[in-house]
Image (cartoon, rainbow over all chains, first blue to last red; front, side, top):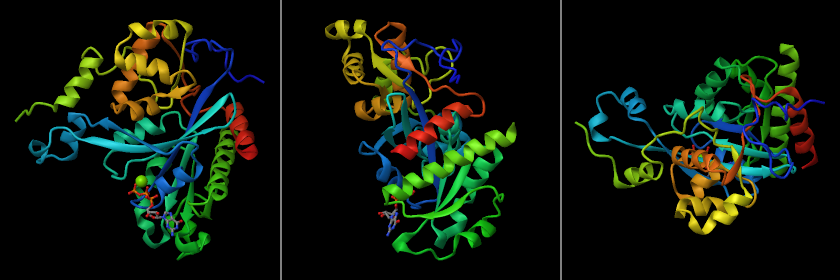
Length: 202
Length: 117
Ligand SMILES: Nc1nc2c(ncn2[C@@H]2O[C@H](COP(=O)(O)OP(=O)(O)OP(=O)(O)O)[C@@H](O)[C@H]2O)c(=O)[nH]1
Ligand SMILES: [Mg+2]
């Protein structure tokens, strides 16, 4: 089976140890306080880290026309976690920055991603629309995970599927973002979905 | 009105010789690095940031983690890592992706590894 590990164009440096260690990533998105950090925390083998990227003045100008003079630089924080799956695969989970306006960061995080888990608080369904539109418009595989705050959903997943008007093949499921097994189940559904999409595309 | 950038910002870009990015496509944040034997033996001669990265890279670590641990911006970490690879101090393991993300074989491997987790 070819894993393209020997494709010289794709491999900038030969591994010194002979290991084909490669990173992969999954984006964890959703509305404000939907449980993104909780989800990453449940799965990560390291304490989720926070890092910052400067926002370019160009992005700033576009963002806050009229307010530019009050703030010349700002940073966007994002949190992430890591799962070492084997001596070949290191999986990173990146939580998207809360504010929808940081689209340049979404672009950066989505480039080359396996796909995305869109977390939804069913009491505030509309909060996930920007995330769903984002991944839908770019044909990035995603699943919708309804975070069952207090063990309950205010709508069942079929209602959510309909209300969000996402394509029928997109998995919509309920999970508790605090629960590692549930969160892992969400990742598995996402990867299965990404594989199906690949096969469907031929 | 053009305000001056904060001192920390200036210092960070000074670390990378004033460039916002290395030549070539920007490295994704999940890009892994690992210290080379040359990096290990050059350790004592390196700048504090390079030395810290050489130490962290004893086992594979991502650009994102380097950024978080050193409290430097992702873009700065990315440039430092690019320069260090150029100097043979570290090896870089970039993700293998096409325009549409990882290929089916890599996804299948990922699925099996997740199921075994
Ligand atoms: N009861 C309950 N609380 C949860 C659950 N998931 C998250 N929370 C809580 O909800 C709050 C928001 O969760 P976070 O994980 O911080 O959400 P987030 O999406 O990262 O939030 P922002 O980054 O601020 O947008 C926190 O206080 C969590 O402890 C859940 O499944 N059940
Ligand atoms: Mg958060």
